[in-house]
Picture 1 (cartoon, rainbow, N blue to C red):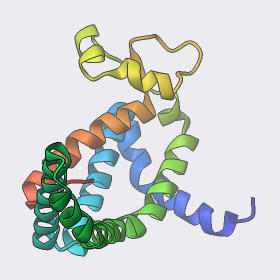
Picture 2: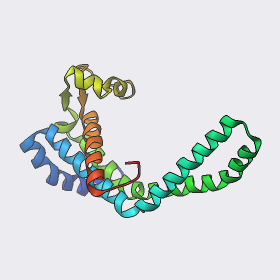
Picture 3: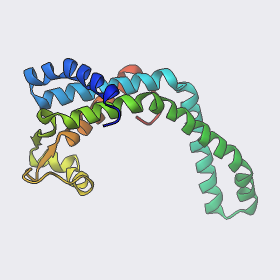
Amino acid sequence: MAFEFIIDPIFGALNFVFMPLIKAWGPMLGVFVISTMVSFFITVANKLLVDQDKLQETQKKMKAFQQEMMAAQKSGDPKAMAKVQENQAQFMKMQQSMMMNSFKPMIVTFVPIILLFWWMAAQPAINKMVVELPAFVFYALLVPLFHMFYHQSPGVPYMAIEWLGWYILCSFAMSFVWRKLLGLKGGGM
């Protein structure tokens, strides 16, 4: 591997930090703690790098424009449609600005998270983990839809998720909690 001189120290640090936790508490709780920490990291990046008030204001303006556009289309009024088309350039600028702002946290968090996922996938204690779900939870969380895109390893029970599914489930839940606790206003993770 070409990047061993970079990857080995990073993986060594991750082993030092997380393997005692995984050995003491088990992979299921270890992945939960890791996903909680990553969710916190992403949420803090969003809080620090995205102007939440501006994001909320832009979202309101975009929603108002979309409602105006739909009303003009329903009415069939050529004057209303012309007005909407005049404002479309401004709408596109707002949309582009909002997208650029939402990319800032992703730029900061992408590489560390990819390295962490790479490390987790390489750990037998984690990548062999299977979490069996009760039928109600399995269907309520729409896990069958997840299985349509991410196929299970051979031998894994149908009503179970592997480490990645467990990570995603924990991450969504904890992202919601962190966003509420830290007062993030806009959408997105």
